[in-house]
Amino acid sequence: MKKLINTAETVVEDALKGLAAAHPSLRVRDQVVYRASGPVSGKVGLVSGGGSGHEPLHAGFVGYGMLDAACPGEIFTSPVPDQIIAATEAVGGGAGVLHVVKNYTGDVLNFEMAAELCEGVEVASVLVDDDVAVEDSLYTAGRRGTGATLFVEKIAGALAEQGAPLAEVAGVATEVNARSRSFGIALTSGTTPAAGKPTFDLPDDQVELGIGIHGEPGRSRVPAAPARDLAAVAMDAVHGDQPLAGDLLVLVNGMGGTPLIELYVVFAEVEAYIRGKGARIARSLVGNYVTSLDMQGFSVTVCRLDDALTRLWDAPVETPGLRWGR
Image 1 (cartoon, one colour):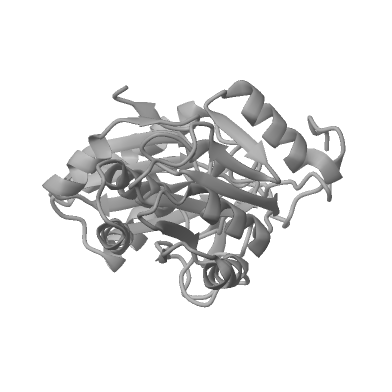
Image 2 (cartoon, one colour):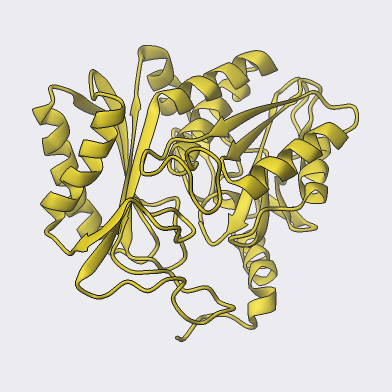
């Protein structure tokens, strides 16, 4: 398996150098990505992180309207507490810092430890656990955190830019997570740079339903089927857990190796499904946002909107991975 890397050992370091070189609004120090402009006095700081291999999550969402810092771990590996402590203490503008944590055991433990060890900074935390595929997995106790992480970072980030206090920013982050549900389907496995081979075996004539973003097993393995059928499986799972109603924010997310034309095919099926339930897609994203290296497949994330959340979603954002309104 050919990869555009120098060595497997330096792939994350080399990628972060490229990220900083491509985006002067960012700076990288000790494997933490920060806004180059530094902390804003009186503003709540947002810090997130997780294993690399899910780009643009999280480093690609550092910037105005989203994160103040991101802590990329090694491939599919949680960042260490020292990274999280450094990020938290560096971005605090005197109003506290919110940690956005996906529900994976390593992430949870390391963010909790870092929060306890941070000095002179008030820290709140929101746990993202939107995946309805399985209740427990190889990496979690409870539901996994996946696509809703982007929604939480965007909406909470917008509120923080408006100068809201920490409790309010943490509250809206918790609300967005509660309103969001996700389900993913893999057509192929991803391939880690170190292993040089797929992380799991999936025959060409089968797909994995309810896959995690690290290649964790899902609900079941079934024969490959048309996009219409696979989209219905994903939406049945989402709708069965939290009925679709009203105005919705919908992400049809590529897993890293899926062509955009195929994601639009899926989006058309998702939109028809939602319309058939009497709900409406008010805001949408289609593309690679929460990936799993070069895995082929897709995930769908749905969030129930209200007027306040819609305004925060529409607020300006300027990051490498998401930008509008500025």
